[in-house]
Image (cartoon, rainbow, N blue to C red; front, side, top):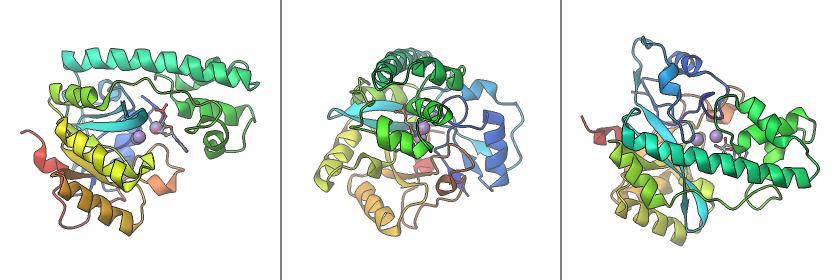
Length: 274
Ligand code: AMP
Ligand code: MN
Ligand code: MN
Ligand code: MN
């Protein structure tokens, strides 16, 4: 079993179409895949009926949420992508994302980047706009040399074009995942740069809200981090998930199907409702 339960397509801020993503995952040896686009399940409507042999697709999503005034991400796995409960939640997320893009663009205009909203919207196409689209736009117009620099200088948390997040609270996002029949996973816990005490509180509150797993491995990470996240999951009675957080083939640190769960973890797929 090679599981990759966190990936992005052109339905959000990835660069491969859903069909190309599935083909690339199969070529990388992935046997259990989830496409988890930001706040949308549009990828699942675009997929061909026939999947590559040996690949099982688990319907998923990466929800944006808010916890203790910070943005956090919840991966919902094994959800029913067409449920009415999910559709209502996604409509709300789309509204927050649209309004947030306008606020980001207003800040960029004040920083001298006229037309940032149009530029990002063009890159997003039918996907809703995220910071990655603004970052690509800033690269395109030569404002920064690289995608990473766009976050370092403008779009990252605390930087001049970052805005206060207005996503729904963590507990209500977990409830949406559960209402859609899914398993809620706290995504990339180390990315929030929390102290040990705060991360422990986040894990406890996530579990209390009905969360079921922690992303113990996200892309390429050092073994010490994997060990500490595996211990945190076990301490809180949470299962373990694993994903590349793949966005594009050029990001070699997030290659499809490379990340593996350490021995001794309870894999999240053991919890998927039959
Ligand atoms: P958003 O959902 O609009 O907040 O955008 C979050 C996405 O932006 C992440 O999933 C990444 O694709 C990208 N991102 C966020 N921070 C960084 C960073 N420091 N460097 C590169 N990409 C980033
Ligand atoms: Mn992304
Ligand atoms: Mn994320
Ligand atoms: Mn992601």
